[in-house]
Length: 384
Length: 155
Image 1 (spheres, rainbow over the protein chains, first blue to last red):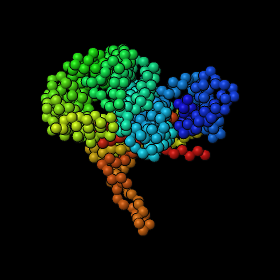
Image 2: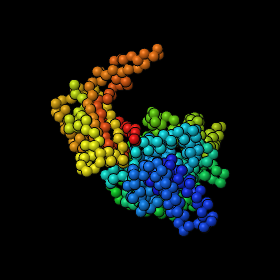
Image 3: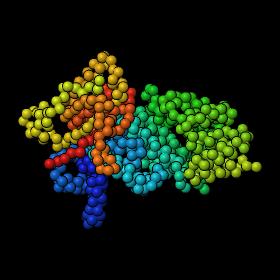
Image 4: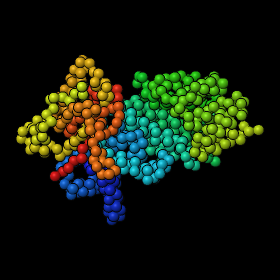
């Protein structure tokens, strides 16, 4: 509804106001006359009419009239799609893109968005206000981009959605390992994008990746909320329906050559979901996929994951050697998973003292309580 | 001195009225089309040393690119000028005693200097970006254009 109203007003603040007015009116009218057959459409119409009233009063109707003519026959989903392309417009900074997406499309409160990114609410409120002002003043359009621009623009949207999902998958801080509101929103929006662009290989790849990752979410924590590593996870808890859906999407995503990075990441996830047990994981296949991924998406985190996969295929000593060059990588200097991976290989090699040092380093680099508990436990086990 | 080439086809003095004539025919009332258009200032930045050392062939290519831009943008160009070297700039600031004092050089001292500008009219940022994307300075190392919406004053 908000998205539909934004199209009329070209002003997100005004649209939010109109949406609130519509809810207030609904309380009054629905109580008297009963809930309409299509409540969403009812609300959208009321909000849109309210926006028209306000705009007419401001005598800027002339400017928006062409928009209204186009807007009337569209369905709500098209408006949401337009809004996501606005929120993820490349003229906005990445942080603003993510914040606007969470606020306007996922419906998170400003306080929630602030918490997800470890900033003060006032800071986040200012960031969102600035971004909205830029949209209005610079006239960032509410429009699905032209076909020529679509691949690049979809790319920005997918990066934002992937970031929203990964932020929720391991929350940067707090008592919960997973923030379901973030992971859930990312999946809903990626599904929406897939509905509207059903053949886009990058969209297929990201949706496959998110579903295959999400399928394993129930086994990541035990009954006490403690972190469970992949090797110890109960595979019976994995969601077979999501795995089937994700795998079917992945097959379609891989039919485009060269594959998108999301498709390769999804393929890696699929190797895990298709392994009957941890022992039967096809590590050579995973290493091969990382070799492809690093060419498509060169990035230190991919190198780290590849090094871990090499260790799983060839043994802890090989893994440790593969991690060695990454210790020089500035982008990973405060990345706790590098320390944790070293700790794990050192532990497997029986180098307890070095393992404790590495795990302690990892502990200092995470504020997520589930991860902290896991690392503290490992350190305690290794100390004589 | 080789500045970013602002095409000579741009008539800076042409007001909104004549532009509307070109776009919509002479019957359209001047200014009417402006109701759903925004104005953007496109600031062209680049490395002055690179501009100064351009070969005649490079210069010709650049001139042609600005010509192509002007042809594509047509009446969307409301104005534009090429600027003299940054070394000819004078900056005025007020000192603590309240006197305004002219000093030598451009306002921000940096390697990338403002070399020219266009004023464009476009329905939205995407349209402005599509037009400005044709400017050759974007491809230069250290070069680029900044697109700034202009405050609209409605009478």
